[in-house]
Image (cartoon, rainbow, N blue to C red; front, side):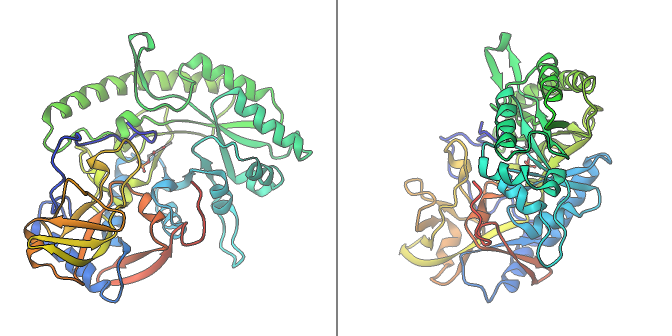
Length: 438
Ligand SMILES: Cc1ncc(COP(=O)(O)O)c(C=O)c1O
């Protein structure tokens, strides 16, 4: 499992994914083809490589996530979008509120009003701890940012660091104080802690440790605890219906049932223990893969979600919610090394996490293309084989889906947002705006 909770859906020994699965409008080959023809018409004037977001699919994904959240607000996970315009679009959806950012410099960008009068986002939780003293100094000296941004903490060491920055800028006791969110570890520990199922995030696992940290925060005048977060990666980030792996599916479901039951009790107890010390504005949990399950926990007040809007390949293997693929990228065929093989320029848009075939982009259109096992997705060129390769010529396009949601935005300067058969927006990515936050 990776630090963000996704796991390898296909074992390394499995054959490379065949193209043609998991396209838009799942289940209907004709509808899938119609969607790609529509995307082709909309992007006819573009030169690959380029990436698109298909708005009709995005909207349906947003609606499906909203319905699953059981009237609790959804907080947009920005790492899964990495494009300001689409983050704002998500954050303004009915039933959605605030963002879960991934770095403090990013949070400062999102929370700041733009010179042309657009209001910054007023509720930005940084979902991971920060040790960026430069950004912390900016936060410490900006009252408006301090009202809008909440920092993640999981230890007294974090509190010490924050206090030392406050001291450095001569504001040991700012008004408003720094807003903090306490991260509770959501992993499942078995065999007296010898088996750890989940990701390695916070060391705060039990209600007593959560309470102790809340008390430590309460003793520090420059800091105020306003929220709690626990991300159950072993549930939200692991598909319980992996294709062609029925035994694995059974194992995943069993572990997720066990973990869900354990977490429900422990999270409720930890939230109660912290609330006994400090009132909380929010308790955040879950992700795209667990929206309905997490929303059903009374202790949770809001759910984080982002990937479900784009619908990347790693989210194909879930029973409860399979987002419609809404994000694609296109590459150009540049040569035919042999009959039955075509080579596209570029292609190595592999995803983070434990290296494996499930981290590769999936060629989806034309259907029936797959990688050569000896080369897979290459740095500057990618050979593809399969029935469709016979008819492809230099200059033709191949469409891919990325394994993960946010990472393709690090490859392109803009996302072409498509509605119907035209481009309705050229949305700059973080990279396109010159930001390398991570
Ligand atoms: C803290 C946290 N919450 C939620 C999520 C889920 O985001 P998504 O909906 O994009 O899977 C993540 C993803 O890694 C996360 O780190």
